[in-house]
Image (cartoon, rainbow, N blue to C red):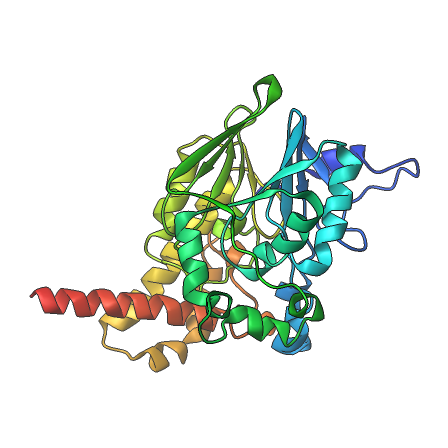
Length: 349
């Protein structure tokens, strides 16, 4: 299935006096060029170096390049920012927002708890005074994995801080405002943003930033336009169902957490990948193979996924494998959840 990129014509409109077109796949130095998807709705594609480097730079080198996509919505007299990125990108991000509007940033929505989306919270808050908003389940995820910030043994922030000075000098800041399942934010001129927690997927605490009038959805890492799915905190069985719930909203533009914006077809292709992966692992686990034996068959699993034209878009190349971003990691996560289902079924019987 072809995943349609929607923003190349818009990028061309913003190319500047030279007439040079800026492709959303190849951002300019730094964070890149914001693209206006609808009046007052902007998307900023982060570099994908982390996902492409793999064995070239190794985990330590890759983590230094990690960043996410961002978006922002001008709500009349104020701005809602989608994700805060990493600390060394926060000031640049705010400067890009200021290039598109003179309105102040009042809200920052954390789509989930991963560092490339939230470690810039403190800087954005200090510069703007904005409320940091996340769903209740997202804060529970922070307490589960960012343990050092909550007075117990060190968590992920401390691990990343060893490789990134910008993180080391920027203590984690959790959301200052939470919601359970939905929160609506209204602006002048009929602009409305709905924050929705529709179920488990990439994490237990994913937020969809939904613009019902514009039919635009910012999904964080619930969607990735390319082979960029990190699954270590995911619910592999529930994820396709959550994607279906997003599709039921009727979006026309999907803004993924990584990769270019796309049509709604991206949701179907991502769900197809997860279902195909589940089938490949379940077939082997059901035959009694251990996780190690299933991992030993990665070549055949990769070939089967690549042979599925709908799922192939999301298959991580072998040369780009990293410990947390690899087909191996995806297989292991899927196997663990299938194994738990099998164990629970056996207990009931």
